[in-house]
Length: 316
Image (tube, rainbow, N blue to C red):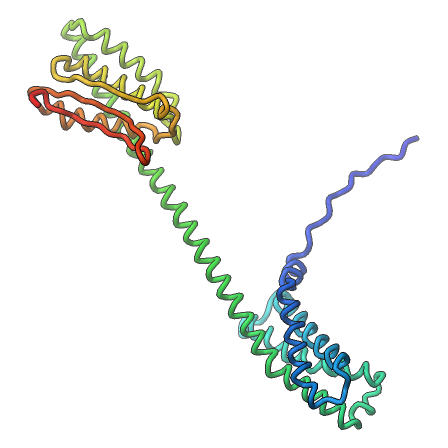
């Protein structure tokens, strides 16, 4: 009989507090603590009878323990009273850790005999020098580190706000574009259908070509009305269909030509934007003119990518 194999659950992620504690102990901060401990040992060596390696070991121990206390106070306890700020708690913990770490060093040196430590004047002076120096410099370094940390957090928050603002602006522009599409597309369709109805009612032979052009336009446009971006060649096809409809509507007043180099056809382009530009040119340039006009639209590639269009009165 085979033994059932139990599924192995994935390891749980580390606790956020432990993660924050470990992430603060970067190699740069550890090296800085050791370097400062070395500087203190060199500065205190002339007044100590203890060999320099022993003195260096003591200052390094005190410096590393102060660094660990500073990092731990930034994570534990998870909640503090409202009247006690986290940064103040960290400074107080560092100030308390320095003399305790110094006392632990001397307790190891005397084998745990506290009375022997107290009765030795040289050891008491050494304790006061190391602890006093640490109490002066340790909290100052802690406040400097907190200032740099708060400054970095403020910069990151400002960058996050800027990115969020840019995203909101982009969404607002997309909403405005969709609103413009919703306004332009029904307007164009209703006008064209009204023209077809008028041609049918009057029995005009242009009714069938206009209807065919409208069907071709709808067949090309409907799959992309709600899209975010299309290719330039697709938008030019819509423009051609629109201009063909307008040409059938006023054949003696509108002449047009659309030029698109093949290498630009695959460029991405906002849907219906080119059609809006062409429709405005025809409506405000050709339609009001009694003599009509000629419309030429071309896409060209120079130092950048740009499009151009023109509407010329027939008399020009």
